[in-house]
Image 1 (cartoon, rainbow, N blue to C red):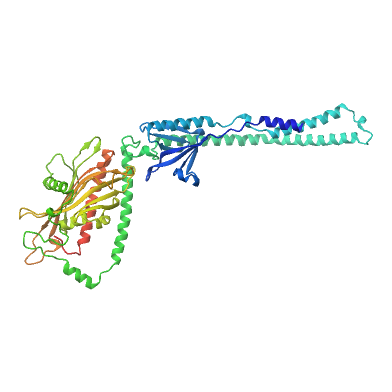
Image 2 (image 1 turned 120 degrees about the vertical axis):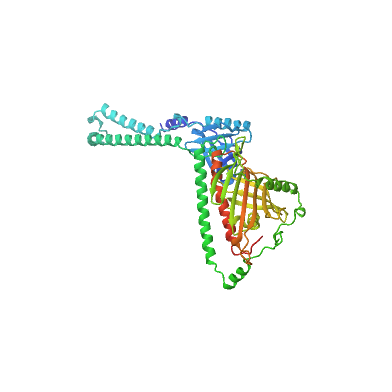
Length: 544
């Protein structure tokens, strides 16, 4: 009997399913908003899809995996190289190098998903049930044996008391039946209580299911900023209002961080007390009389003549300087094409709306008047890279790529990310120049010109969008003559500033958002920078 049961059990076993071969390849996977798309080694084995940082790091374990049994593979609607794999609320955004390669991956994954299966009913084992049936059959055989043979005739030559055994068996079965009857009575009495509990559990689960469906429906209505579909671009799933709200929230956070940093710097500066000797030294150098000749005094940091400032971008520099001197200083108050968007005291900001291929290229022009500083000082701090981090709050990092001359450098500058807009960087030539006046009644002009160029050592990267700029800070110093023979002080000085900016963001963003951000940020920049210059020069010698 045991041999037959063993044989039957072995025949019920399914043959072992062999694992499918392991397949692997490189795909770009969306990681997060900071790092964006990154190459990852993707491995497909059976119905499990895993990814590693690289093929060489497989021995350290995978960084994530999904089971393809219930996965949904969706090719992207616009991007021919991208496809998404979603399992419940987990989504993998993957991207191949070519549309054909994407289709091969999708076909292979679908094939493995179809062949994986979930087993069958034949694979279930019921050894416990088989044992119970065998035991029951043995008990029934004993019962029928007792029925077929009278108890009185079962006492054999060995002296076995079959009658006593039968009586014992009868008493035992009677006790078992009584116990079972008692258990049945208890179960019947408890049936109503269990039914109430079951009804409550069914109702609880129904409420939980309804709440889940309602939450899922609400989640679909609300914007879910979870992947590259919500990044900047013409096909972004974020509408203009949501885009602006997100940008404004990010800018507010940056402003809060900057205010905290400024407060800490102010506390640190107040802790540094000046000795009497230092103060007297500063006071003696605070005033510097401008020479009576029409040519302004040139200090050690003054610009050398343009003829000596020769480098490979000299022609472009001259063209940019002449353009700004001819057009940027023109009054735009009566020009209908320029719109006055901000007016705060002496500061006015104008904008001219220009769009090209859906990209906002609005030129901007601002005028301002600042007391107590000279044009040379304003341009000195605007051009000097040593002071950049002191007043520029939008820059994440910058470095001087190449020094063309004493007054011309090439700078690579990466700006802070403001989500959902993509991160930007710029590569530009920065030049400081002094323009002598041809009319003795007009002041000399100091100018800083920044315009985009290309450099072999810093090509555009996939991490940032390369923006193009043409910016100029143009300053003139106006001096009101002091009374009598008194020396010129900072109270007699007024700096007239003209700031122009032409920026190509290099990528698409909602026009209304860009214009609203420009209207908000440019006045803040001018006030922040000019206040910084006033603070830096308050105890320094006047630099004409």
